[in-house]
Image 1 (cartoon, rainbow, N blue to C red):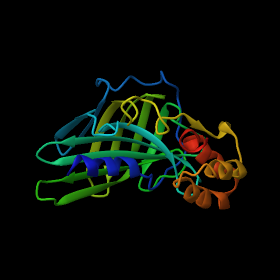
Image 2 (cartoon, one colour):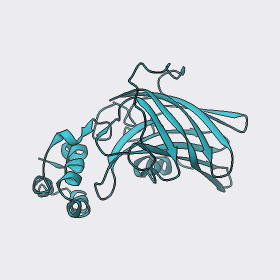
Image 3 (cartoon, helix red, strand yellow):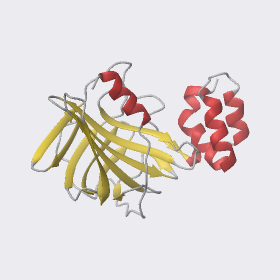
Image 4 (tube, one colour):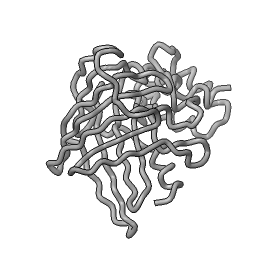
Length: 238
């Protein structure tokens, strides 16, 4: 799979489901993941894959986290991912949904099949040289964020899949942008303030990517528009 395809995947990961309430315990609640910065490692079926951050054009790296919003602004999205190139292409994504702020506080969060507020879902994709791919989805488990700050997200996870396998992993990552800056890095919060009128005025600056976000968020009211503004204000607003 080409780096361009990986880039497209990295920029379009959307949280597909959610879980119940986590028990945030603070940055110092658990030991760190024990892997160096720029690393996402996962183990399944006795095989461990280690992805390390490598830039793949336009400042995007293969290992990291990114923030965003659900299409309708109903939540923030927060995904952590690792991509490895070798004899196969392998990609693991933890995709979370959060109503209040991203990056979310350090703590314990459930992994489910379809993430809701303060939950993660997991997705493991493998593709061979022939182009045949295998996709595995999460069913249950837990993500532990031992540190969660702009440019520095660390933790571990244990995930049971729909194919009755267990995947464990650990990560120590920065933002998916190589410089750890930009709208994908955060922070974003409901405390940012604003209204749908503010978002509409922002869209008047002319960026063609803004009106579709406004149209999707506006029916959900100012709360949805605030999320969109909090993430994308620096990108769209004059």
